[in-house]
Length: 506
Image (cartoon, rainbow, N blue to C red; front, top):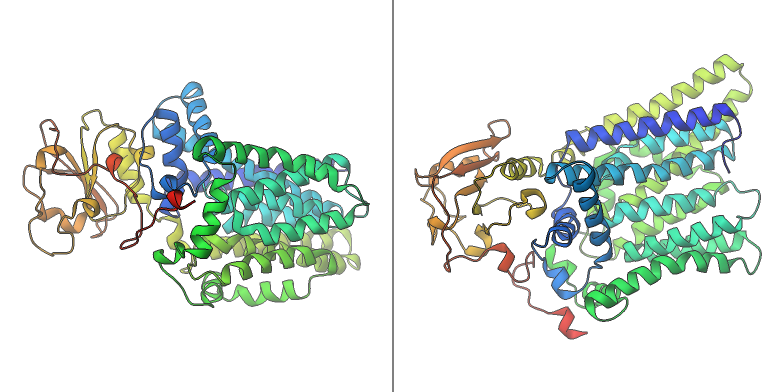
C-alpha cells in the first residue's frame, strides 16, 4: 500500500534518508569485518571472479557454497571500476554502499506495514528499522544471514496488518523474496516455511500460483549456478545439509552450550532486554507472525552445537520489530485522549527513546567491540594496496584478509600454513626464505623478533601490542619452493585436524 498523503511521503523520505546516512557513516567509519567469512566467502570470491585471482577457501573446493552471490558482487566490482575508479577502496566501498541502500527496502516495507495501522505505527516502525543498531551494523555486510533477513523483512511486512488479501503482484514479490531468502540462507528454511504458509492462508485458494511464479526465478538461478560450478543443480544446498547435519563439520570450528544465545542476548541488550521482552510478550495478534518467526530462527540454531551471534541476529531483529510495533500501539492509545500537541510530543518522545536506546546498545560494552573488529588488519591491507612496490607479503601471527583488500597479484604467505614459530616467545623468527617477500604484516608486539633488514613502515592503532603493523625491506622478491603461498594452499580455512572431502563424497 503506497503512502496515502503528502505527509506520509515526507515521513518516508526523511526516515529512508536518515537510515541511509546512518549506514553510510557506519560503513565508512568502521571498515572492518564481522567475521572472516564476510571476506573469504564473498568479497574474496567476487575478487576472484572479477580479476582472475584470489584465495579459494575449502568450502568452495568442497562445493558447499553457491557461487551466485559472489558472482553478483563481482559485477558490482566491475561496475565501480568503470564508473568511479580502480582499487579496493573503490570497489569494496561501492559494494557496501549498494548493499546498505538495498537494506532500506526492508525499512520502507516496515514503514508501509505500520501505515496500514496508523501513522504512529509507520513512524515508530520506520525509525526503529532505520536506526536499530543491529540493522545498521549488518546492513552492508556481505553475509548470507543479513541478505536473507532483508528479504524476509519485506514479506513479513507485507503480511502484517492486512485487511484484504495480497494482490497478484504482491504474491509474486513474496514468492521471489521467500525463495531467495531460503536459497541464500538454507538454515532459515523452517522460519521461511512458516511465513509462506501464513501468506497462503491469507489469500483465497489457488493464489499460491503467483507465489510459485515469483519463487521460480531465484530457485532456477541458484540451481543453474550450482549446475555450472559443481556439476549438479542445488549441489551446494545438499552438500551444506550433509556437511553440517551428518558430518558435523561446523562443530570442528568450536561449539557453545545450549543457552549461549540467551546469555549473549542478555549481554548485548543489557537491562533493555527486560523491556523488550515485555513489549514482545504483550504484542497483539497482528504481530504473532513476527514473534513466531523470530523464535523459530533462534530455536532452529539452538540444536546446532556450533553457535555464532550472526546466525541468529535476524531472529532477535524480528522480535525487536514486534516490540517497536507494540510500543507504537501503546503510544497511539495514550494519544487518543490527549490533544494534538501532546500526541505529537509523545510520538516524538517514543521515537527518540528508541533511537537513544539503539545508540546506547551499539556502543555498550556488550557490543562496542564488533564495530572495530578486524579494522586494523583491513586498514593495513588497504595501505599495502596503495603501494606499487609490493612483490610479496608475509602475514605473521594475525588474522588475514584476502586479495580483495590487498589487490596485488603477488605471493602472500601466512605463518599458520608455513609452520613458523609463532608460539615461541622472544626468539628470532626463523623463515625458510626471507627473499620471497618484501613486506610483513604483523602485530606490534613481535616487531623485535624480525631481522633489521625489515624496517617499520606503517602501523594502525593506538600503540597497543596488538596493533597491525607493516615491515618493509628494500630489494626484489625471488621465487621460492620453501614456502607455500595462499594461492596454492589447499583447503584454506579448514579447521585443524579434520580430514574429509565432501565434493568427492557426493
